[in-house]
Image (cartoon, rainbow, N blue to C red; front, side, top):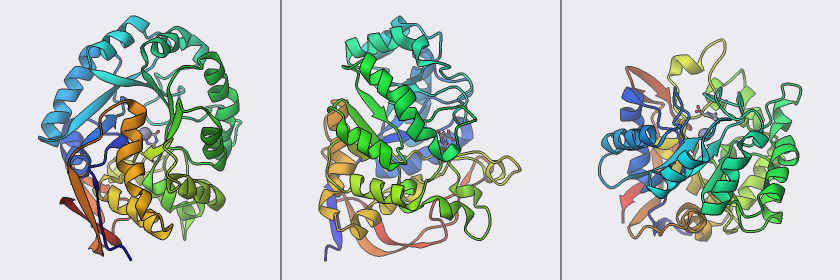
Length: 345
Ligand code: DOR
Ligand code: ZN
């Protein structure tokens, strides 16, 4: 039995850091485990200019401390200028653009109302080799919330792939068997990230003994067989699946409310949560590919040279993290996890 794992230092290919006091509190948790993170641009107001992204990057660097590199993204809106998108990419300020369908999720009101409206931007991105990151849910309220990802594949993703066959796309935080199958069937320019929570919970967990607002995120967790498909995909070694936590902190008051926010804060024990799944699936030998190799390969970035260690050891995770004068509830908080992150190896 493997009791200690040494892997290249991983990266988080999908993280929400927020801003101000919340940023200061949460960024160190990601920086403790990851060398780099793809930073989501859904601030209020969203990050839509090179100047705003560069300033936000400075604030993240300050909050996270040395040895951590934020990889920035631009928030796509209907009216975004392709020249601005290219300029930020050419200057090395951002590495990708994020497509939020308008009103799909937290702070997406300025998102794209119809992909046809950003055709010129996508054309430019295809030309310059810049990755498109998609929140893959349709926003039609007549589509059941548990079907919105599946419908997105047919209605939005497939036409986009057909219209821009050379565009590199990351299907973010996938939650369904259909998404797994779609990625596996595509050429190598389509990849997907998978969160720790979607590997751990199915939709029953959200209603276990009562409503559990801290397990509510978007896309929402689906039926058990979808979780099984995600676990198999993550642990398969297939290079198109890689780590992206979607750590999304909200103050406890904003979650435990009549209309609670979507988002799960998993940064404090993200690697421990992931490695537990690989252990359960008897795939510890594939963990490094998922956590540290597949992401850089897809983004065309070098892998990290430093190594980190994880051990099989009881690891009591605190319920909450103090942040911005309040608390944020930790995913798996209050439990004793079977694996511990040991830091630099
Ligand atoms: O649950 C989510 N929370 N899903 C998202 O897409 C956004 C995120 C957030 O920003 O809180
Ligand atoms: Zn997200």
